[in-house]
Length: 255
Image (cartoon, rainbow, N blue to C red):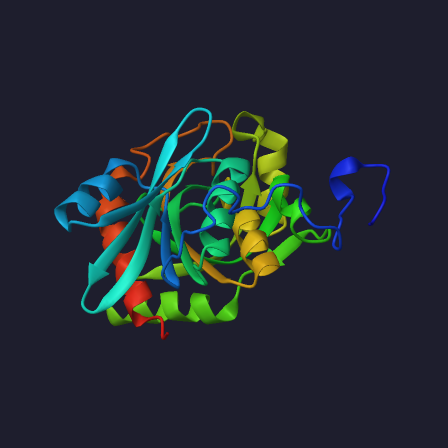
């Protein structure tokens, strides 16, 4: 047990959890590959069209999260539309990883801190740990480096499709309404070009549990000019394309 005057920096690396992540899914056996999506209804529509099997509903106090398995081209892929925010998303992912998912690709939107157009694709190579959840999975550090193998698979898939992308450092934060003007400038200065809520925590969860994790993002709103916030279209036009890309990436990810 690491002790500290700041509670979030106290990390227990040895004692077992009181509640296991698969406590209510002990019999759930999932495929090795998983697309962990923040894409809304397009996930459920696609799953229905492809006759995906609902193998589990993860029940929280406020939501039921469907765990789909796609049976396509001789291979099974787990597909889940996640809740947003690091604590909720990581709770779901921890259950999936503990139930068998070992190669996880996440996809979702991000706000931009640099002058980037809407619906552009980015591939995070590291995430700044400004959320809280990752500190319960790994010892304290400023950044977490994403796993090289899935990042390389994502980049190769984009290159094969002839789609431009930008490697980036992302700022993962819980405080959506506390992205202050001075803090945005500070994050820009230390090299963060985008902001989202989950990447650092999801990466930490997978590393703790022995899974590989990669993520790609598409640009939504813009905080590049802190005096003139631009909501734009929140990247909605990229949802379907991002879903199909994520599945294509997993198909290329060697078993």
